[in-house]
Picture 1: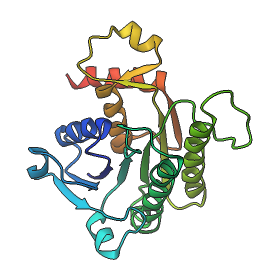
Picture 2: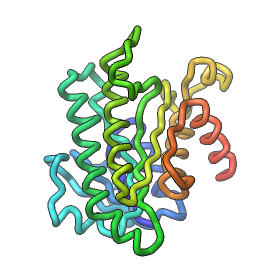
Picture 3: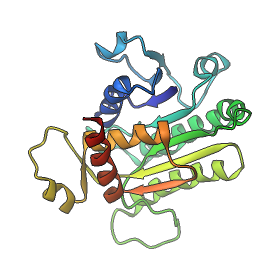
Length: 232
């Protein structure tokens, strides 16, 4: 199975990359990235790296390299090392993501329909995202509505009957997989361990349930733990 991944050089995307390379169902992984991948991932025969300078435009050449993909894991986000401006967040979380989803809808999803398959787009979102853009919120209003706007745009693409199926994940805090934080504390703080989240993102791309799914942090954590236990 051929899968597309964005954000492979980030904290979460890096773990998705590592698990995807070890996943037996994924035979080809196309990484859309702004910079080179580190070794040993970059030389792995499963990987095709496409370096994009403009994430708003998907040329025929780029689309030809994505041909045959059956799902896309969008794990790209605004830079986490500093507080991004609203303009940067909007560009990355909404404009870039929707440009990718639209390219998949127009070019990659139609051929799968003839095979009786759908194209699955898996979005790494955020807890407390608010889709109601008119709702008054007591805290983090701008960020939560921006995340909700991204979800709305993706769902609108799906509703066009374009053979696109969407999974939206809403994790809370993401804890390093080797963290010594007790499970009870992870749960109590509405958090999830990195490897648990990555396992769910990959599972949704490979074998996601039929239909649209919005997965909140508790469901993600429980599902991730179960998937990791099964793989051991």
